[in-house]
Length: 113
Image (cartoon, rainbow, N blue to C red; front, side):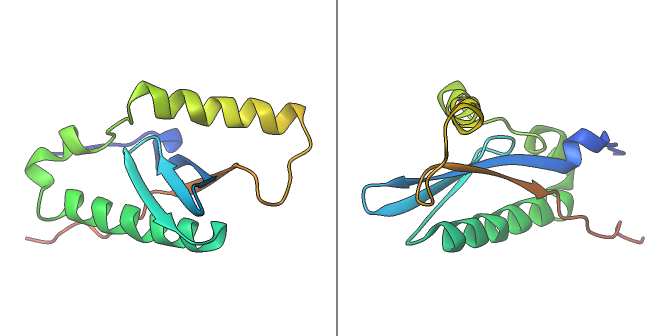
């Protein structure tokens, strides 16, 4: 099965925000999340989860890749992302407030037969 991605699909939209003493991060394009103690740690952890997920989808699960990439998060998380984007544009953003970040889809070489 051949799958082509548009350039916009190579960039994943993510956000991180404080949540009950820790940090929560969500990738709204793959419905993946992570928790950690700091904004830097949660972003690093989510990057690792994304890399593992995409690698698995493009190798071991490639027969189902069309169902796995993209895999949008539920509407509430996507709305939260856009709310944070709007809030950050309108208001001054404090150091420990919610933030957006983009991740690139980790590319792996095509398997050789």
